[in-house]
Length: 144
Image 1 (cartoon, rainbow, N blue to C red):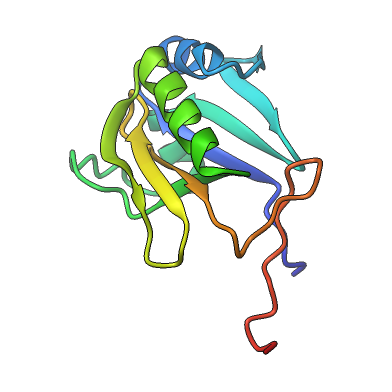
Image 2 (tube, rainbow, N blue to C red):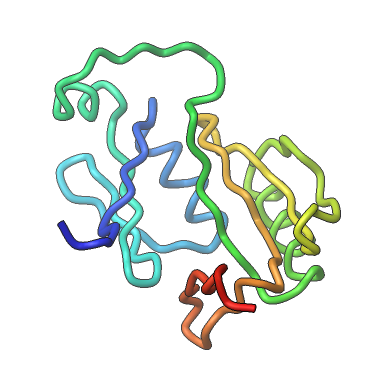
């Protein structure tokens, strides 16, 4: 299997509400058969009904009301961009789960939750520079 992620699908309780939230962030999606697709760099973010996603994945939907064990990250090029992106998310209806602070790795980051409690990290990490198109390359941690 190639080392690649093509799509990230978020199970949501209300597709229209979730789409409206992401569009308030400035994203533009396309809806097909009650599923919304957003082009996000080299992959796609998909919003689909949580119940339908569970059935499709062959699992029971164990809604716990707690942390789902996964975060999504949006890296930016500066500390100021973290603050701007977090402010934009709050304006769109996000709930801040961790205010912007300095990180242990010399960066600056904050976290917010969307209306379905999917957690996003907004991070400036000087060790993970972004290309002009926003792509990130994991550095060689073995290099001195």
